[in-house]
Amino acid sequence: MIALKTSGNTLNMIFDDLLRLRADNGTHIMPNEETEQSIILLGGSKVGKTTILGVLKDSLYCRSRSQYYILTTSPTYEKIGGLCVIDTPDIFDRQNRLSECRITKKGLIIKKQEIPFSNGVLPLFALVFSLENGINSSDITALLHFKKKFLCVSRKMMLILTHAEEKTESQRHMLLHESFDESRLANAKMRSFFERGVLFMGCIRYESMERCNRQALLSEHCEVLQMRAQLIERCQDNESTKVVLYSEMRYSFRKFHYLCCCFALVCIHSKKNRYSTKLIKDLPPGTREDPLEVPEKHECSTEPFRNL
Ligand SMILES: Nc1nc2c(ncn2[C@@H]2O[C@H](COP(=O)(O)OP(=O)(O)O)[C@@H](O)[C@H]2O)c(=O)[nH]1
Ligand SMILES: [Mg+2]
Image (cartoon, rainbow, N blue to C red; front, side, top):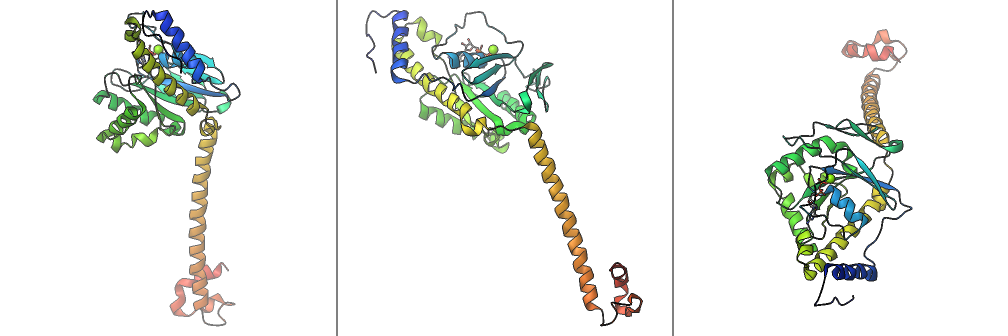
């Protein structure tokens, strides 16, 4: 670790130090070029989707609050190493429903614009939520609606909680447990819906930059580097990059359904056979050749017997 200057700091000097620091400890990893993966960032507006994209490109990304807010109106694609990050417009309406968002075999449609799944390969999906004002009741409603709509791709789903740059790793873990313990989320088994896990993200704070607060910038950047590396690793781990064809999933379900039907038919058939065998066994000797001579107590056996 390099020692940062303690006095006479200008913002440029602080940034030079931060740049040297991340170069020295090698924490500013980039997505592997060879591991192709796509991730679609989903969520409401101003939750931090575009900021995640910026931080993935450069851990020192920061945008001023007063800066003109850039509204994402259509899906935008950005390639960072082998990772294609797809930023999207707000998917929730005023009732926290997803009325203009639809998932099909071929792609995800948001506000009539399609994000195609190339060759039927499912990308990763990340629901982005901001921790800035905590998670309130309407956020929970939004989460429940989201789960309903995206349940079919739960295998590829992760949750990213933003504005976490001021929290340490243990604080983040504690927060996670508390959040999912909320009764509505617990009843809906929300945590297990995010099969790719829950991750955190953040960025260096504009307020810290304005005040040239070196200590704050240093600690925020340190957390950002860690969260950023965890997100990149999660996107590129074997499980996440494994090809899952949407059609294959549907096919597997159909196959399973078909096998269940076959199994049920076999069961019915074997039961019927057992019944016929029993009847046959009960028949007095010699009656097998002449079904019409079945004794009175075996009246009911004539039908299966005739079929022999
Ligand atoms: N401190 C901090 N600010 C953030 C974070 N994510 C987003 N912001 C700020 O929140 C505002 C909206 O973020 P943006 O990424 O544009 O949200 P989007 O509408 O979901 O794309 C911007 O001013 C960002 O600088 C974060 O993780 N930490
Ligand atoms: Mg945006």
